[in-house]
Image (tube, rainbow, N blue to C red; front, top):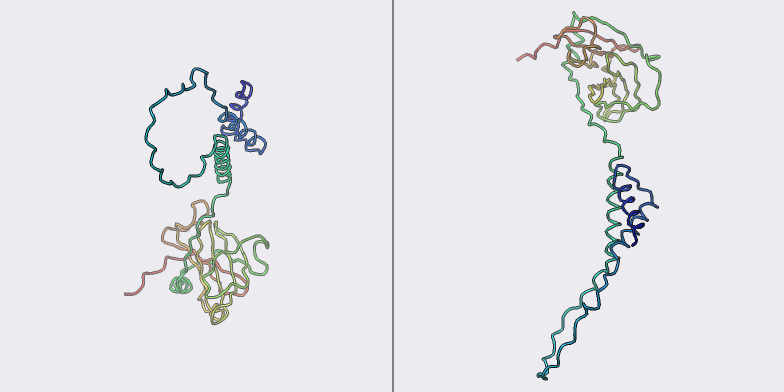
Length: 257
């Protein structure tokens, strides 16, 4: 390998393994060829290095027959070894580049099922104040075919889900589901990776059974309802065929002991 080839080899090494990270096939192929040529150059011996013949010796008794040894495969030639190493380096380099470009995995969604006690205490709170009404027909937000519905705690399969509003930083969704035993009505609210929801038999929706509540600290300060205090909660209450009520109420009383 002459000086020009050595200079080209150094440039290609910096180009592939340096900040540029050039992984084009032509560049990688040329790099492998030059690496092979560099490590395959023959080593010549000077004439003085040739071994001198041994002096004549006295005849010796014939040696015993040698024991057979298992044959070993031929050792790889230097050129083949260099080409293999260069190919491994290129594959590893491309693999790391590909891993760096892969999208990060989706965050894990945290789900919480609202209890019947939370729903019924909201509906029976005589001091609760309705602060919003979210219409169902048509909903406050337009249909988005690419929107992914949130989780619903149904016993069966969701048949139809509708995004009816986004309020105080939370998406509000309703759904109808085919439960294991009967038809179910569902309500869920979602913010980032947290979903709170509740499903009940559809025949019980009109009996104050379907509501989802959120505590004070579930809202960012800039999105929290006006005049909401730390001991209050916001409830999304689906009892009407026309709308979902948004209720500001006190926190649920502690359970009876």
